[in-house]
Every structure is written in C-alpha cells, then in structure tokens.
Amino acid sequence: MAQVSLYLDKAIFGKVERAAQAKGVSISKYVATLIQEHFSQEWSPDYAQVFGSVTDATFFPNGAESVIEDTARESL
Image 1 (cartoon, helix red, strand yellow):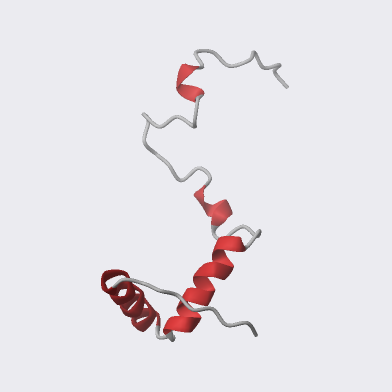
Image 2: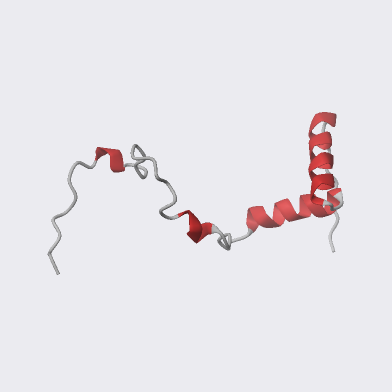
C-alpha cells in the first residue's frame, strides 16, 4: 500500500481530526475514504431516492424555467 504525506494548517487538521473522531476511524482511514469517494464512478445507493422528492412548486430543473410549453402528447 502506498503512503502519502499531507501538510495541513492547524485549522484544517483540527476539522479533519474531529470528523475522523466523529466517524470513529483513524485520520488516515477518514482521508482515504474521502479520496476513494471522490474518485468513485459509482452512484450513491441513495441516488434514485431523490427523484420526485422536491415538492416546492417554484422548483424547475436546470434550464426548464425558460420552457413555456411542453411538446404535445398523443393520448393513449
């Protein structure tokens, strides 16, 4: 396994240290997990649950606020 040295200022190191403690893991494991998640190409298991979860009537998907009418649909 490769090793990496990180140079962090005290404020950032403190945040990393507290976050690792909150997760109950070592700092090394915490940072390794963050890096793995950053480079992961898989969708989060909870990703599909967000669809349809926005109930705000003023919400428009990106760019949809400029669409006035949808394409006419054929009745089935």
